[in-house]
Amino acid sequence: MLIGDGFGLAQMSALMYQNGNRCSLEAFPVIGLHKTTSYDNLITDSAAGATAFSCGKKTYNAAIGMDKDTLACRTILEQAEDRQMATGMVVTSPITHATPASFIAHVPVRTLNEEIAEDFMDTEIDLFIGGGQRYFERRADDRNLIKELEAKGYYIYSYFNTDLARIHRLDKKRNFAYFSADNQPVSAIQGRTYLPYAARLAMPFLDARSEKGFFLMIEGSQIDWGGHAKDAPMMLAELKDFDDTIKEVLKFAALDRETLVIVTGDHECGGVTIQPGSKFKKLDLAFSTNGHTASLVPVYAYGPKAELFRGTYDNTQIYFKMVEALGW
Image (cartoon, rainbow, N blue to C red; front, side):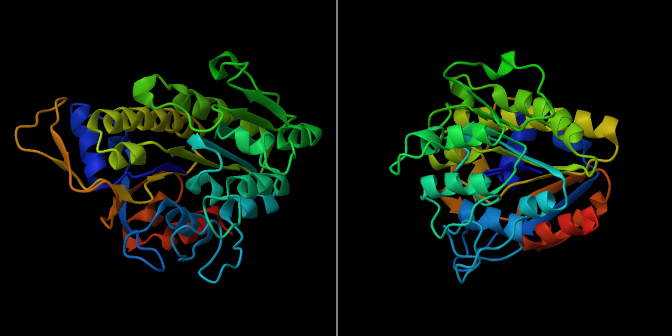
């Protein structure tokens, strides 16, 4: 599952036209739309939006892996682990940020980064790549979760001492984690390039880890941040990075023929419009807000059971459609 944080219909259009009307999304045979509202607000945040995907439940803005009554809900990643599937997450935000957190943690407020990091200790997630190293080792409670993960058998690498691009092969017998930043990774326009490579590294590793298959969540996290900043060049660079990552996933799926690929966003951000006078590869973008909007969000599907994702539906239905596709 690929999630573009802040990826709405306008961002989809910008990606296509910025690429000269050519992008990876044209390879998808199935397109749907989902409605993004949260339990308590017409305009969702990433926490409630991602929890809808991970648990199939509407919840209040800021909730992580919890329903509207602050009861923990078992996520699709945790359910995949229960069924001996391999699991992974690859993001360009802190790994404790709202979207990835909603697949693995259960806290009432998304800002509880150290508590979210603790919930990683309650899973056997096979692979995770993202920022947020500080929340694992320089904590208020003096716990060093990196050492605890190593004691559980994880290989732990960090941008401090290892470039991810220099890691060419993973030992399928051991879990793997890579911290791409102490807190927040730099943006694509500032030179961050690891997301497509991380996706290419993760898929065969997870595939080899279990005969039951794998569940992988990949997030292009900073599309959203470009919208919040009303920064068109930043947003376009993040969209290009996300598109390059989708291409890598499609290459794997086309060869594997057993992998369902879903691409969507948790919400739109920025109220983006393509202005008059824009041309292919030279867009003039305008923003109506520095926040999220309630715009419908596209859903692209490729592979076995892709047809389930046609139509218009609530964001919680993405969870139930994934469960049906997995045969649970």
